[in-house]
Amino acid sequence: MTPKKRKKDADPLAEYRGKRDAERTPEPVPDDEALPHGDDDTFVVQEHHARSLHWDLRLERDGVLVSWAVPKGLPWSPETNHLAVHTEDHPLEYATFEGEIPRGEYGAGKMIIWDRGTYETEKWSEREVKVVIHGSRVSGRYVLFRTRGRNWMIHRMDPPADPDAEPLPESLLPMRPERRARLPRDQAAWGFEFGWGGRRMPAYVEGGRTRFTDDRGRDVDGPGGLGSRLGAALGARPALLDGELAVVGGREIYMVYDVLHLDGRPLLDTPYQERREALDGLGLSGPRWQTAPWFPGDGDAVREAAGEQGLPGIVAKRLDSPYEPGEESGAWRFVPSR
Image (cartoon, rainbow, N blue to C red):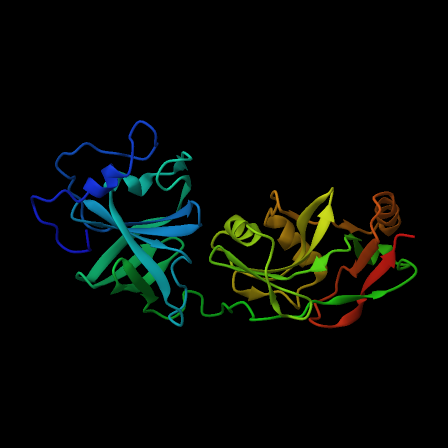
């Protein structure tokens, strides 16, 4: 139903039940009986790893959870509106649901509670819903307004949730190493990575989606499925990653070796060692992407291992070095494996 007062003789969960088999899905599928009475103040946002990652916003209203699928999540700033697709009403029990919806079933994929709490209604009509949300991860005044059919938009009415947060840059040229014949003498001051010999592709990840650029800052297509799956791995966390598409073990893998912007914070001036530790903390490891290993202070062993694996060389990076976009810097050095 559209977000309005339901008719007493209508069954707002008929569409919900019609799409689900209670014997096949772990989702709550209540019997056709009187709806529970609540206080119309519960909200939940669920991260839904379905065919396409999205976030489901649900607001308790007249005994059901009125629901919208929000592909990019709730906007953190009033400068950007996000699409919100109105879906079928869900039972109140869904506010606590987490689990794996089986393949072949409607909405197949993992459902995770991203945030929940209470809300207050300022306005509720067929075309506009204005609420104040009180959650642990998202709080503030939001308005949903209908544009066409089931398509709505959601707009944040308050100032940005984090006034100091900065959006991802539109484009950033990658930093390049100088070519050297020998390893640095003071190896304890350096970290060492394998030189993969791949294609440089910074990745801009936001709202579960990924955009790639090349080493000249131009938009390029990533391998089929890589962008959406990498975006799903980061979920709602915006990040700018530096890495390259390389052939590893006979397969094309996106090797990630730096993070330049994370959770609204630019990291260009952050020392390399701290950026690498932040990257490791993201746990990025999947079938088409990996966090590239790094080794502080032992360049000789890394160079020897690179030669044994047939890699072109290694990259030495000063532990205290900032990221210098577009520059060829002596703080990074490519050393051939032979």
